[in-house]
Picture 1 (cartoon, rainbow, N blue to C red):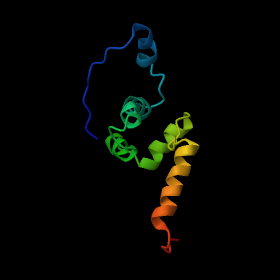
Picture 2 (cartoon, rainbow, N blue to C red):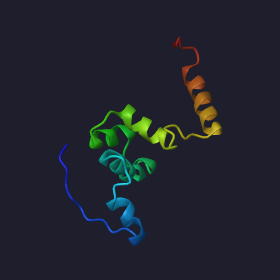
Picture 3 (cartoon, helix red, strand yellow):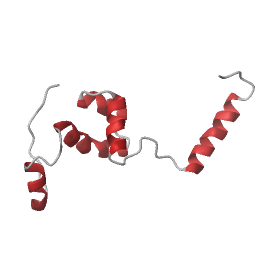
Length: 95
């Protein structure tokens, strides 16, 4: 994976955490930097994983390990999706 150095403006109080390597790996740091773009749906988990050079599963497992769920749908949204699926597939033999 090619890398590039960029300069970030961060609050002064954050500097000790970034400079002292509080992240275990560069992967963790980069995964946290890219997460807002996943959250606002600018990119998918799969695309983020490609950018980070890991599998989608590894990225999802990392986020899960720090409390960020892959599926964040409300129960109501899930039930609505299931109802739509049932309506669309009515009469079809789907296994």
